[in-house]
Image (tube, rainbow, N blue to C red; front, side, top):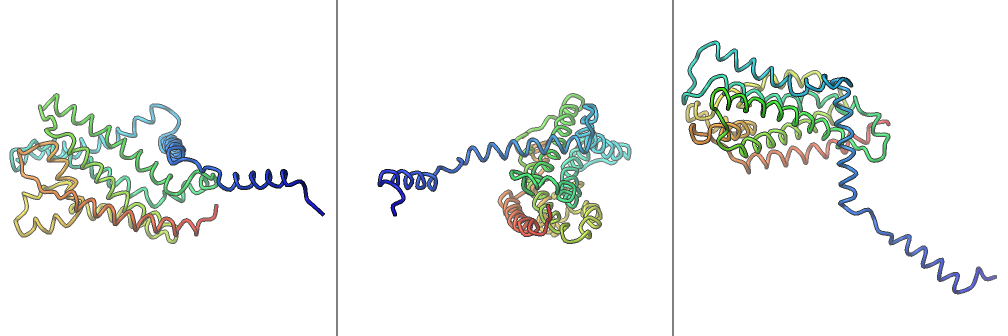
Length: 281
């Protein structure tokens, strides 16, 4: 027996074909959705870390501001002269603030997934969204603290940044390195608590090698090449080039740092993708 007229069959076939080739959401639409998701996660992270009181949000940038100033003040009190005639308070403070960004992103990586695992129940939220929101919040907090410090240094000491763009680039590259390491730590923490226990120790033990408290030109010639193997050293040199200009010699290789960031992100994203399969939502 027939199932209908030829016209009805053609209509059903056309409807099925149109459903099969229905246009998928555009890239711009998907990007807007993810931006909104990350924005919402940032607000949630702020509320989780600092409470719902608006005054609590001040600690977001007040903490790096106070710690950086304390480090600079301690070295200023010692009265040691700096190579190149640099202001010790400005040098040590600006040196610590980028390290605070690195330390904050890396140290909080081990608890990033565990503390937000229930959010993965929502279709639009991914592990990457959770990690990105935490890192962007950290970057904004440290960036605000650094801007306040630079305004104070310019007003009080006349130490205005010579090339602000390089300072921003150095901070962005520092975030890239820290984020790549954080991805690996977050993925590893899904399998074992060991990462959470050793991460803080790792950041403190490596503090002296990151370049936070020295410049490459201070070192003997044979040690300069060894120091420049560490990618964070290039980031600190970039920040100081942006602050001091050509007053003091700086050494950095931007493509070298970008290569490090690319490798760390490829490994980290692959590790996160594999770790996601072991999460129970």
